[in-house]
Image 1 (tube, one colour):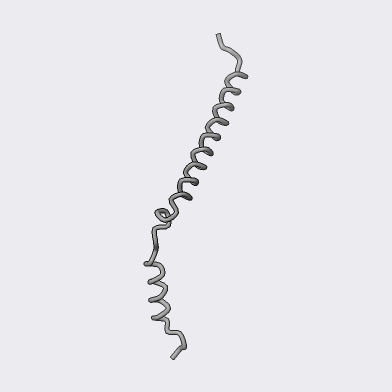
Image 2: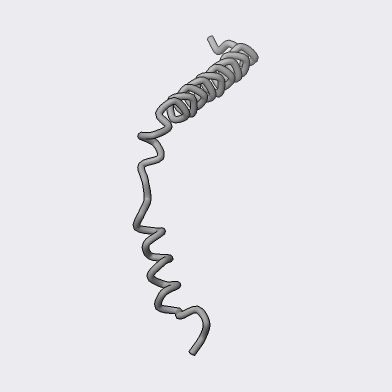
Length: 64
Protein backbone atom coordinates (compact mmCIF):
# COMPACT_ATOMS: atom_id res chain seq x y z
CA UNK A 1 0.00 0.00 0.00
CA UNK A 2 1.48 3.38 -0.95
CA UNK A 3 2.24 5.88 1.76
CA UNK A 4 -0.07 8.45 0.11
CA UNK A 5 -3.31 7.10 -1.23
CA UNK A 6 -4.28 8.47 -4.64
CA UNK A 7 -7.90 8.68 -3.52
CA UNK A 8 -6.95 11.03 -0.69
CA UNK A 9 -4.82 13.17 -3.01
CA UNK A 10 -7.63 13.37 -5.56
CA UNK A 11 -10.17 14.27 -2.86
CA UNK A 12 -7.91 17.00 -1.46
CA UNK A 13 -7.29 18.40 -4.92
CA UNK A 14 -11.00 18.53 -5.70
CA UNK A 15 -11.63 20.18 -2.35
CA UNK A 16 -9.10 22.91 -3.14
CA UNK A 17 -10.61 23.50 -6.58
CA UNK A 18 -14.18 23.62 -5.27
CA UNK A 19 -13.25 25.96 -2.42
CA UNK A 20 -12.78 28.98 -4.66
CA UNK A 21 -13.49 32.33 -3.13
CA UNK A 22 -14.74 35.47 -4.83
CA UNK A 23 -11.46 37.36 -5.18
CA UNK A 24 -13.04 40.28 -7.05
CA UNK A 25 -15.52 40.90 -4.25
CA UNK A 26 -12.78 40.89 -1.62
CA UNK A 27 -10.41 43.10 -3.63
CA UNK A 28 -12.82 45.60 -5.18
CA UNK A 29 -10.21 48.39 -5.21
CA UNK A 30 -7.86 46.39 -7.40
CA UNK A 31 -10.65 45.67 -9.86
CA UNK A 32 -11.50 49.38 -10.01
CA UNK A 33 -7.85 50.24 -10.72
CA UNK A 34 -7.74 47.64 -13.50
CA UNK A 35 -10.91 49.11 -15.01
CA UNK A 36 -9.54 52.67 -14.85
CA UNK A 37 -6.25 51.65 -16.44
CA UNK A 38 -8.15 49.83 -19.19
CA UNK A 39 -10.38 52.84 -19.93
CA UNK A 40 -7.40 55.22 -20.01
CA UNK A 41 -5.49 52.84 -22.29
CA UNK A 42 -8.40 52.53 -24.71
CA UNK A 43 -8.79 56.32 -24.70
CA UNK A 44 -5.11 56.86 -25.51
CA UNK A 45 -5.24 54.32 -28.33
CA UNK A 46 -8.38 55.98 -29.73
CA UNK A 47 -6.68 59.40 -29.56
CA UNK A 48 -3.63 58.06 -31.37
CA UNK A 49 -5.79 56.48 -34.09
CA UNK A 50 -7.81 59.67 -34.59
CA UNK A 51 -4.62 61.74 -34.95
CA UNK A 52 -3.29 59.21 -37.44
CA UNK A 53 -6.48 59.41 -39.51
CA UNK A 54 -6.51 63.22 -39.43
CA UNK A 55 -2.88 63.35 -40.55
CA UNK A 56 -3.59 60.90 -43.37
CA UNK A 57 -6.62 62.90 -44.53
CA UNK A 58 -4.66 66.17 -44.40
CA UNK A 59 -1.94 64.73 -46.66
CA UNK A 60 -4.39 63.65 -49.35
CA UNK A 61 -4.72 65.95 -52.34
CA UNK A 62 -8.01 67.82 -52.52
CA UNK A 63 -10.22 66.57 -55.33
CA UNK A 64 -12.32 69.12 -57.19
